[in-house]
Image (cartoon, rainbow, N blue to C red; front, side, top):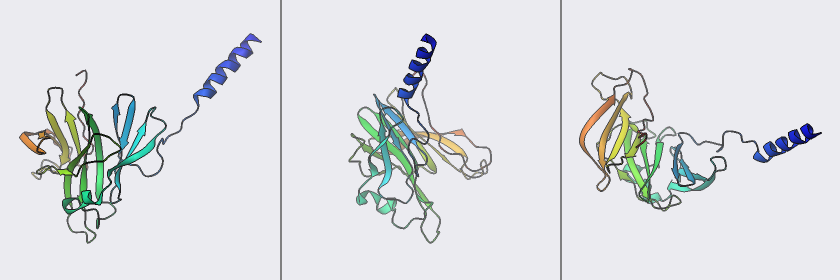
Length: 218
């Protein structure tokens, strides 16, 4: 009887835990990037040509997620070099990264401007910032001279900030978007500075995607 009671109590305990099934966020939410701030988690995803863009979800337990806002929520954010009005369905916002540093949230991503007439596409890497992930978010800060896709922003403990991305260097050392490169980023003026370093030349294929820098035990 005691054994049966023990088994019943254990089973009841497991039942209270509940069962959780992936995906935790259903639907079209590709290229997720996650950021933890205290006990809060935030995820941002690619949104391609859709507006509002860059959906942001929040969770306390990594299981239950709530949509709290969008990084691109004003039409004024999506004009000029940030045009989302006439792009192909495979254009627009690709592979964002969300980060938090000293009271500010950062989303860095690429706008692949691929016009509907299939003219050669332009890739614009940019950053938006906010003190509250619910918004409002800033206008895009375009990083000139930053080729390629899938950018990452890394805040080092020494105060320096680095931009990481991928692209084809065009010197026959890579075939496709194969090179991973890194360069210091001035976040006051949103300009690259210093020497650009090639981390990896790729393996002559397409495509190298999603490079990120993490500092272990730093």
